[in-house]
Image (cartoon, rainbow, N blue to C red; front, top):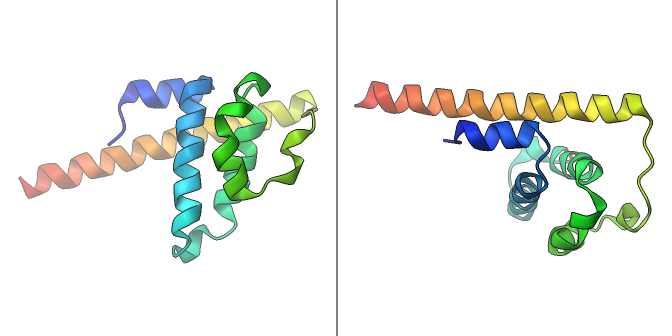
Amino acid sequence: MLPDRFVSLLAAEDPRTLTIVGYFLMLLRRVGAIWWLKGVVKDEFEMLMDLLPKAWWSQMDWAIQEFKVSDMEGEVKDSESQRVARKIHVYHLGASLVDSAWIERKELRSKA
């Protein structure tokens, strides 16, 4: 279960929260046995790195190595529409995490 505060910080693109999610994505990549995550995890990580301020990229060195993201060294230049699309995506990611937490709570309540 994820606290509502964490999801709010994710939606607000808080750098520390994005870093935590980035390392979570790295762990999912390392597992590698989840067939339906193939390719999705790397795409999500790259999108997250686009949102993360460049000053925080050094905090992601280990994860970047894991993903072998070669283009992370360059400056990210986005159009406003790309930036808005990523914000919408992060909002939906946060919403799906909240939905997952709600489903978990519901299942725990039904077992009790």
